[in-house]
Length: 406
Image (cartoon, rainbow, N blue to C red; front, side):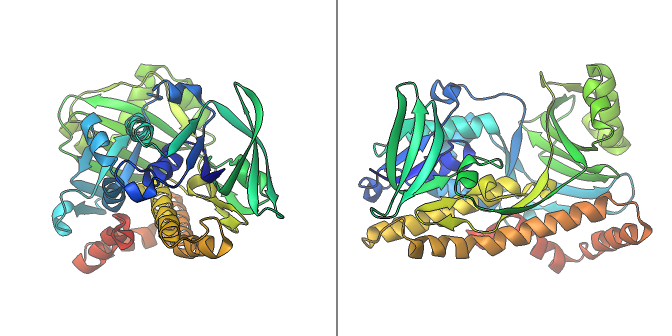
């Protein structure tokens, strides 16, 4: 019998396991935690190097710091963002957000997903109260009302087996099987866009500057990595995506450089593509009508997804696991049932409105900045001018940095 059984050991699920681990918190030792993960390469310590990276808000880095996993990420390499420049293409409407404005060492960090996963799995393996069930696949779940437990049917190398837990947590992504098996309904909206992700290397150092350049097709983000590398997240329309993905490397690089703009190209110098492949995915707006059911909770992309504009998706997941872990640890220390609806309602209440607010704000922002309607053009330029005012800029930065959830 597990106290908490987590499905999905990606960045969100593994973070939750580490937060409940006993390496740095001996009081967690009596909590029995299990993680079900289908990718066997994770068990071998092999994590994808497809160039994907996540923008980690300063507040999220503090959550990882409190868990004890941030040091492993720093050792493997994280890149602080000292300045973020937001602009509308090549027009002179821009806002610069600087770390000095908030008196912090960084606005946030860019961390390659492979670095995050390697650090989390290293930490999880060092926790005596965590059992890794990998590779394994969830086949079915059933709430056993007469015993008040969740029974999970799992297929693994040893065959099919049944596991029981006081609380089942779905951290298995936007297409969450746990959410579907639990019959949790969602509201969602698809964008006519595709996000193409690639890694580049520049002749000159980027000086820890990040850029969000809004183009007619959608946001074009340049996120610093190391001293002379960057992760580019290029939002293209669905119509132009097949052509872009089919281009050879030289033509793709030429198209991409046009979107950098002349001033930035002069600053960075010559650019070469480092990624072996062009990762791509279709962004969508999704929000679950509930995050909890008897003996069940969902977190991260299993509960909500958002457009990558402003890089808030991963940060919402980190805030989810921080809230859930704190609720569960408090319940455990007070000898309460960690899987009871009473306990889970506290988690949902802490996270639902923050998540929904960010999802709606990013949806509105993407639509405003992608539209060529004259009204929206005027509105976004007015908004960029308003953000020149220090008070409004600091309010925006406070929430973007996740300081309200630390």
